[in-house]
Length: 298
Image 1: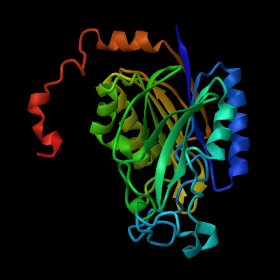
Image 2: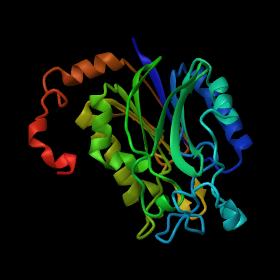
Image 3: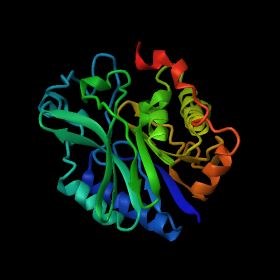
């Protein structure tokens, strides 16, 4: 039995009404193609940061303990994303739109005085899982506190794991999800093109190459189905590489948007392809944890 998976490359900014209008359009297109899992990008609700400079993001340093109170300190055009509650009306609205489709999306989470770069998985029945971004690139830590855990969860399309953007650069993150039983890993990104020596053609950009390489490597080394969504277009000083895709457990790209806005859709017999990939050379089974002491930070 196949599951139809879709990964989106699309632009999302600060306007929440515009974001929900785009989500409705994407869901309509997805339903028309029988999609059961729709992966939206990092920062779908409220947009990402306008800059990733070493001296802080969005025009001002925000202490992690005070993140979420700095909107008045930055220029209006670069205000931080709106901070939303997991149990708030925006996530409830997302769930209502999702209905019988599993939808994953990123947003800026409010938790008291702290902000987190967070992803949520929902259906019409409510929240299935939540992930707070653990690994923070460049100046992102000035605007968000860091998450601390990785965990898989059950869903109508199988056992899922979620990562956000830079998390996928760390093999331990996706391996933790695979060991927790994740069959499908959704990675939601706002992955930009290179800031220096950038290529005018996104397809030739070195950060596009890294984005694609991480997607394929993480799927292959963990023998999971990998669903990678990304922002597209531009926001602030950032130009996003798009390149949403679905990758099989052998590292093969099953569908991709390339460096354009769009939706990559693939119908996959998830249990079947995982069983086939792991039949002889099973990477999780053949691990030698006793030899990996350094990974525990020893």
